[in-house]
Amino acid sequence: MKILFASSEVFPYSKSGGLGDMSNFLPASLVKAKVDVEIITPYYKQIIKYHERLVYIGSKTLYIGNISTVVNYYKLKEGLLDIIFVQNQQYFERDNLYGYYDDDIRFLVLSYAALEYVDLMKKPPQIIHCNDWQTAVIPFLLDEHYRKNEKYKYIHTLLTIHNLQYQGIFSKDKYIYFNKDFDYTYIHFDEINFLKTGIERATMINTVSPNYRNEILTNSFGFTLDGALKKREKDLVGILNGIDYDVFNPETDINISTNFNNANYLKGKKANKKKLLEYFNIKDNGKPLVSFIGRLVNQKGLDLMLDILEDLIVVKDIKLVILGSGDYSYSSYFEYLLSKYPKNVGFYSGYNEELAHQIYAGSDMFLMPSQFEPCGLGQMIAMRYGSIPIVRETGGLKDTVLPYNKYTGEGTGFSFYEKSSYVLKDVIFEAIDLFENNKEEWNKLTERNLEQDFSLDKTAKEYIKLYKQIIGG
Ligand code: ADP
Image (spheres, protein in one colour):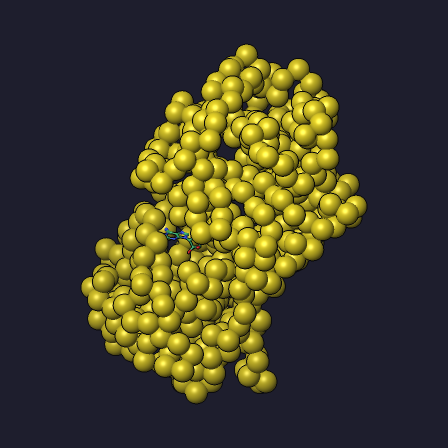
């Protein structure tokens, strides 16, 4: 089986969130399962660090509307995995991954470059696996511009939607960049919508949890594409993401202060909590350490948190650690909390991989009250490091966190459904109550979390099944 995996970000070379993680971890697991996978992704500015390890393999000229531009392909070997970096200084070597006025052209460059790369391959892939809006136009371009060529005749496509909110919406005047065959059925609310072209044209579509798969067929979660998705309902599946158990392993993780396993986790968690509190200059007085790691955007349920965090600090004396970057309204609120309650609050504004691991290992509770959550990796990582997740029952959070039942003692975390900060506060109070007044139950809960299996092997098996279905049928 040969797969070309196209993604706009690949950890650790480039990452803005879960897409970056999955674009390395999933192909790596597929390769272990003997699938032949090549990843294709942009050569961003920071890739220069790896340049010495790259091997030049060829160049192509792309013609995109009235633009012509040359891309160079470089290969990086990472274990059994081949990563192809598409180098084009003008479009990719910038300070950030996204957010530019010409993002449409930038990711058309990536999409055309992926298709042109097929011509350099000894054998064409059976499937081009596209991810999110940045590469969602590949199935359309393949049909319109490449099908007649023998090498491209039998290539299938899979589109994975990691987040339906981001669709790649651009002015319809830009249709010329799709070249002359642009089809007006892809105009969505008077604009070009990259993701919609993929939904219409990909052989199959999947999203990253079974529950989110069902949610996006509804008006409330469909972000205006529920109609388009409904038309493809029988070709739409949900596969739960997983996490790399080698990267996220408290027993071997070099980013945490004290390694631990299921047998000695009590000592390990205590030492990591101490270190984390020290990092933020907070004194440990035995109160619960509650954390949040993620993009500071509305999706993550920050509005619910903002209403109640101050109360929890004042009333319960919780310790709060926040790591993230994003909207100014949220980061300025955390700056405010930090300045008012320096003995309780730690806030790191920005991206920090090592600190993230230390937070997962040192926290007692991990907050993820998302408005919607396609899958969510944070809660799985938290569980792997013995931090109890507190989540909203949506998307993948519902598929991965079983609500704690104080009567039966079952469950793996605390959860709620209603989008209400008061309900969230109640649930956090419940968690604090168990933490402070019933250590035995709390420890059992932690042990159940440590024993969960969210490894990618399971995820990879599901993708292999889907690939077979696509090729076979
Ligand atoms: P999303 O893809 O919506 O951003 P996920 O929960 O699926 O959310 O994945 C987020 C990933 O990014 C996790 O691995 C999380 O630990 C990591 N992450 C998010 N923000 C930061 C940050 N500021 N610093 C370090 N890691 C982060």
